[in-house]
Image (cartoon, rainbow over the protein chains, first blue to last red):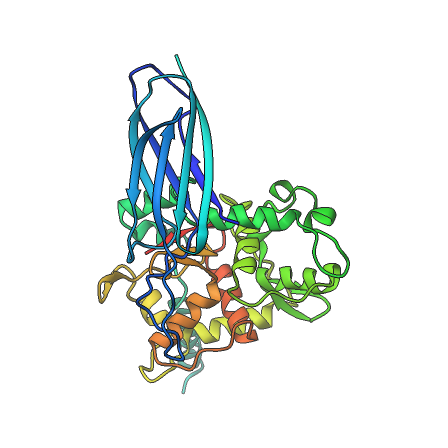
Length: 106
Length: 261
């Protein structure tokens, strides 16, 4: 099970720029390391992070090896309407995690 | 030797002894948490619960708290209730004396004793994800609580051992903990600022480790750094050192889970 923490303001004025923070637990194993016995440690990273706002994509990030464990994203978007922000992380070994948050826009 | 001279000598010897005892101790008011030595960015990371990666461990620990486990099929919550209330201040009192073992145990050992005795589950490995998560969850509930380990006739000998270890030169570099953390804190060791070694934020999320880690992991790191043979995880010597460090940091606020560079 993946643990994720998201921080979205509960309320915002229409047109306001809001800041969104997400943190997810993931080892982000680069694939370049070797174990103590010399065998390569297979790569295990998150490849893609997508945030949608009422179904419209507002942020996307592609991840690569050498990004630290437990990736933390801070980004902003414009509060256009009340609704749901959905977050999805996908990666190696079939990794998939979702989280969502609601926002009220007045 | 006149009587007056003898008295004077005795008095000066006493003053000298008192001076030696006091020399090592850090003045309480001058103590600073490792937090104060960090960059603005790292402090911001610790302060924001949605940016602090240690909170992922707290989140996981909260789930483990409620999960039934072991042959007894019992969850932590069935005895201790809501950990967010019942565990407040607990981490600030550890290491604490265990009447059965007749020695102090640290928080990780206390959790494992609950597992093996009450839950009849196998003890969790030191530095395992689960043990760190549970410890982080318990320690989180003491945030802001002043450190207050109990020093009495039972724990005093262990405190004395810990203090002796702190001031003892060891390893190939022949260094004592105190030489860095009492005498040279605030100066640089390679690229890092030497902190005063107050265990206020454990378990900490160390950016270098990219994970949570216990105080014992940190102590073993330091021992390797001075090229001494590190004690095994859970060794009595490490718990005694933990006890001394917590006593040395008495009254300082718990920050768990801390973030350190």
